[in-house]
Image (tube, rainbow, N blue to C red; front, side, top):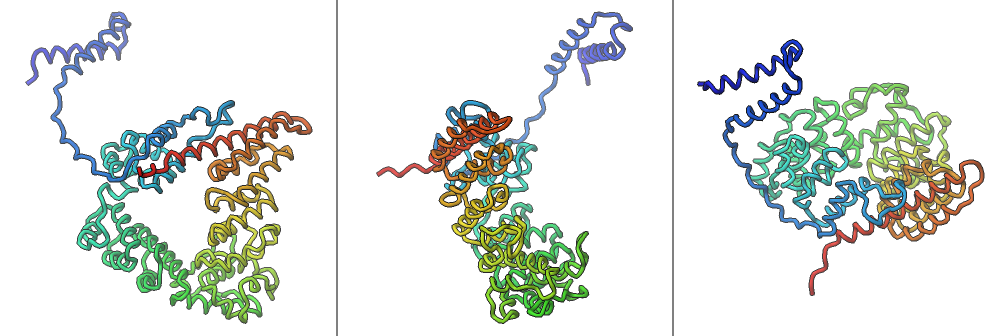
Length: 530
């Protein structure tokens, strides 16, 4: 029962509320005095609240046996998370300072490769950064580990970590069959995805058996995610499961199953597609299918084309990209891929682009380096005359099939022949850091652009990529170019502005490369004592 004092206190508060609502003119009084009284009553009301019962303490954070990074690296991470520029890392004008937000992903990736965990004191800031930037989440959550997920359970702002991690606890080892089965049956979706990936990496066939045990009861969107995990370690042993998935009630699941089967050249689906495709394409010309029958649809061919595409061209492309590339050498009398790609099309060029684009998709899907080389052609040739495709996006995918060194050599030659404006997408698939031929070609192309008087913002995308990807060993050479850029004599109006911008851009690039080198040295594990 409320006391007399509590009723009196309530009455005073109600009186103040009424005065505020009606105004001090209708209820005589001084506005300043009203505010003072309201402030006093607010403090008294809060002080008079009875404390609620204490909630249960959270369980202690799980242990993370990984070591923290060395102290200099921890300081660097704090700097990157705060977005501050360190002394001597850029200097001068604002535009010459390195962009620390672009270096944070590299720090996280390098720390992950060394097997570090996130410093405990920086976990909240790291989770805040991952909340703001989805591109950071995989690396940030891996570094945060189980303690990051533990923290996320205490703060709704970090709930994304519960969806993207393994649920906070350690996964059972793949050899712990009872533990695996229990987590698969009872775990959260994120835990089950992580578990399936772990089992797949250890024993691919065991992952398929696990997935088969609950396949019929899974939601369509979950089936699609689980099916996608089979890309790792894909082999002929997966064929029976994938063949059964061709009859799934979800169109997206059926399409993914067909794509995975077509990446297995020896699968029954690949054989069916080869039979259909070679019936349409041969030395005598191209005769696209006239209908999309039930068998084609069962094998993943989508009947309805997107807007602007003809039906027959759409069906032809799907058949060719799903057929094993080996079938074409038999169809064309034993010719190698380069000779096949160079063949004229008997019915003219109307089907050439469609056929070559499908071969490009097949080469990427089947990871066939020989066909990728044939379809790319010479790096020095004009892109419009490429044997496979003039599309830079498609050529970047073809390059991804080649070994790292060969890929970098090809792109370096392309940059020297065609400059940087055409090379942005191709550079994105090259291994980091850009060194040797590729690194020198990029720096030479930037210097050539400076000499022509172009403004550096025309190359802002490549500049940003170079800051993240160029070999730090190029920094000394860039210092010389910085001096040249500042002293360059550009003809025409705005020449001084162009010179200043290029000097600033080169200064920023060199400073960023040195900062990356410092980050790498700071993260290097200490040498063991003798």
